[in-house]
Structure formats: C-alpha cells, structure tokens
Length: 133
Image (cartoon, rainbow, N blue to C red; front, side):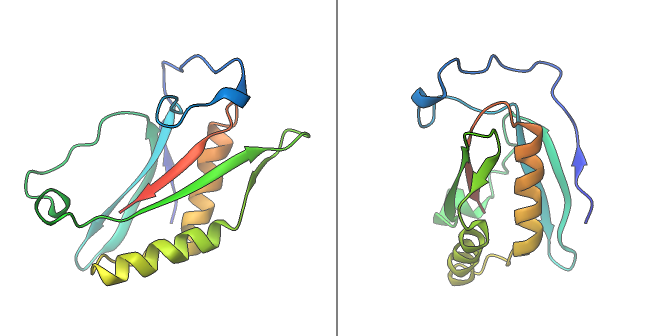
C-alpha cells in the first residue's frame, strides 16, 4: 500500500529543550490517517498536516465507547537517529484489543512502515506516537 503524503505549509516552532516535552501539549506537524470500509478493508493511507478529525455522530466510539489506544514513543539517540522500542509488539497489542471489540485487524508490518515514514517527516522533534482505532 502506498502512503500518500501531504506536507504542512505552516510548520510549528520546534521545542528548544527536548528534555521538557509535555504530554498532550506539544504536537507534530503531521499525522497518519487510514480509512476502513467493509469489503474493502483498510485503505487510502495518508500522512497529512496535523488537524481536527471529522467524526460522524453515528461513530461507535461516541455511542458505545468502542475504541482502542496504544501508545508508542520515539526517542532520539545521541547520534540523531530516532529509536522505537519493539513497535511490532505495540501493533500486535492494539490488534489483540481490537479483536475483542470486533475492530478490524491492522497490518502490523505496514503500520510499522507508516510509523517510520511519519517519523522521517517529523524527525525534527522527538515525538510521542499515539495509535487509536
């Protein structure tokens, strides 16, 4: 699956001190989104500028609390690389939770690839990644 990329035209100022990143207060310039349709499965993966998500009033998560969450952190090494600790295991755990809620399984290898692509685009800041379905 090819990931379509749309880069922001208004990048945010990067934090001066990466040791003081706050949870839920600093966001990257981009986010990963992918659609799901019955019969078609997961499709149209995209990396897009960070922004609001359109949500139908009929969304299951609003009515029955049907959602899952799995956090994944990227850390910058001293040599500048961004390291992920066992991202495959994060997506496997997410799929295990999703299975209990009848949420379609995500392709683990593709999700790791998409995560790395997002990190490459927003590599100027060491970020926390959050995946929810």
